[in-house]
Length: 133
Image (cartoon, rainbow, N blue to C red; front, side, top):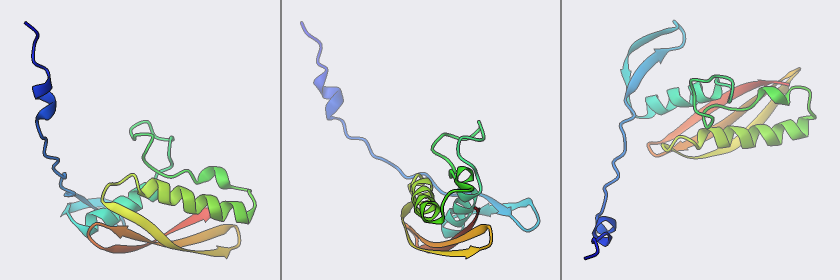
């Protein structure tokens, strides 16, 4: 007699979204102040992702963070294209973020200020990142 294996494949699984509740970071005072959830938690995640250099910290997955330090000294046209692509790629790793749009660039000496809109499942976030060039 042969075992029945097809029954295991017929079962349906429910995928539950994990809560976004996390510790609230007070960036001005450099401390943890309670808990946060919803859009504030996503804003905090965006800040953390943008300020973590990818592949530099062993504690994080290779999918976490941005790759912006190796753009130093490159031509401005290349930097703008790469920054847009890398920021979008880094933020879309978070499943609460749907899209990253409306990039604007402002050059100020040896820095490039990048402003953009993060479209989340909950709402929109205006964000910015300063990149040394």
